[in-house]
Image (tube, rainbow, N blue to C red; front, side, top):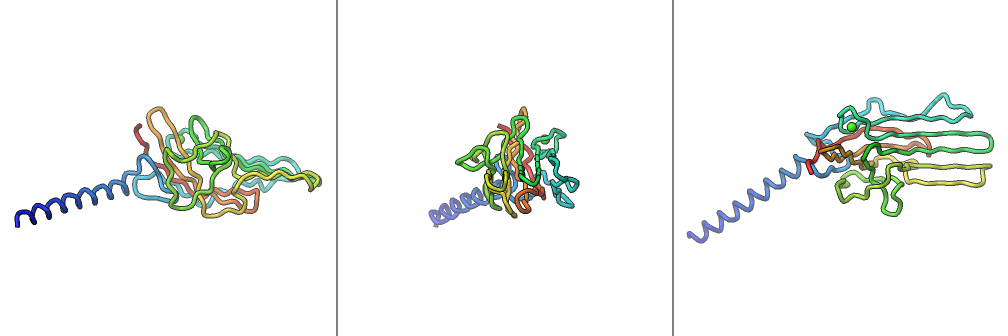
Length: 201
Ligand SMILES: [Ca+2]
């Protein structure tokens, strides 16, 4: 009987530890973030309406639209979206890229440290993600005389995917995601973003 009670007690203790460790993972989110997660405790911003990076006034001249994002809401811009578009009878060029400012970084694909990955909802973003160079491409296409062309990037016509980001300050690291869509190959739409409250290293 005593042996049975001890066994029951041991199982109960393990159970309590297991449950509390699960709760911890769901509520703290210090060292990682899950793409698409808007759990309590995260810094979150929803664009209403969505922010469309498009200059409706462009004609044949170069059009340039920029946006600064302050992901961790500390008043310091963290990422700069840049959308260029130019067109003439002989050429067409569209470039949509993001600059990681200061010491911040963007999750890129393994084979190119300047091509932004298209993360699915539920993807984990943490220290082990593939962090790229500061100047990264969403999508770039250039056609000259409608013959030569350059195409780079993965975001053409992409919806419901996420950009993984990291903001590094003097004493904190913040992990975040940005939900972006691209209409056709040249219009970037920023929809929402979230960020941890800072992981003490
Ligand atoms: Ca900031």
